[in-house]
Image 1 (cartoon, helix red, strand yellow):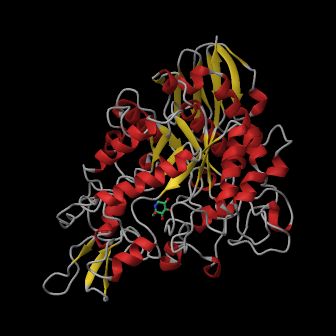
Image 2: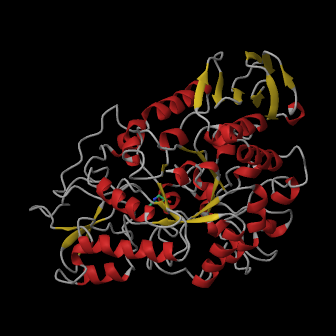
Image 3: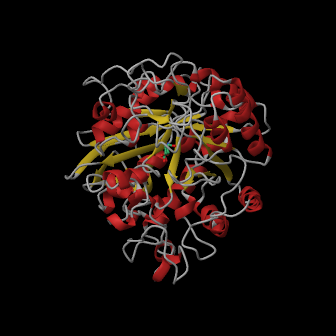
Length: 531
Ligand code: NOJ
């Protein structure tokens, strides 16, 4: 337990890299491992302690890496296994750990397991996937819908059975009731942990076990999540089955048997706060960290955010550690969604993420206030965007390339290369343009990360909500820090314990002495070190 108390993933900040859009080292317009290695100095300077690397395994890219064709290798678009080893070693030298993205719910339809599985009803991998007969009238085995819309079943004429896919038809779901599937994943996990990978972000880890009787999902009600209401059914039997906890416990035991223990960061794709705590088990026997979609999708207003944090703090089992994120590869970036391009809102969001109790997970570009990219139909790559344009643009806007510098290619790729997704970032918004500027978002983010690392109360002190006027939110961390946010359009005066502004969203307030009250402008925040 002593190790866990100060574990790097608790005290440090994790940074998500979407490698295809991070940095291109060979001028083909696609980000790669060489690009990540080339920017390790930036990440060390920024002060992050861990990288969650979105999938780099070989993939036909029906869902951009989340359709894996070989779990123990690297896609040539990104480089080689040796380059990944180099990345692991290079980042560890800088005190940064690598978490890979594990995709256990489904494989690519090009994975050799599925190719064998679909070949005949008697093939050795047949039962590795979820196959079912049509109903007597020839219709699908049940009513399950895929997460991207449409039926979750596709009839395979070769063997006249349907196979299950909770995402695209090119992503068949594995059958986790099959012991050989479990064994195969034990080997995959150990392959990477033995190579020095510090843990995994686990894709839709709430979904991997399906109802063994394949019962119909019940109709959605007003109380169900928006996505369930849109698709008309509650995800009760195609996901969120109780048996998944047995698997998470097994992985946790294996993670704990390593020295140092490996880390499990789950994508808990659930939409009610109350559904998250069970994924932590008893607080130390399932996931170390469980992403919170209710938090990610919260409106950026003080009352909502405060109530999500308070409910999270109340609901977690003892010893469990929250995780806070404002953007990721599937969600509009915080600079757009929460801040709508407003500089004060953006800084309040960063101050909030980096001074709550729990692990902040930043998405590449958050540190410079990168907004979503603009998309045209011709530029779309994401299967969701391709299917629903113009009603929805899909996830390409949050996946556009990272701007490192000014000029053609923006330092992401070479000047004459065509980036795989367009770069529409405004001229002033890039790393080179912000790095030396004491008042930039980048400097603010770096200073916040450093502050958090330096003061134990900021990373590990208890969270205590403090009373504050409507439109504002104040909390204490341990005995020494108070963060106050004015998330409203009017100035407010807040009473707080005496101290000194350690960092303010308006940097000219850093070091300001606070006696008993602090007046904040609209959309201004500060973290005050009490004395
Ligand atoms: C969640 C991933 O983040 C998303 O990008 C992907 O499409 C689905 N899981 C399916 O793997």
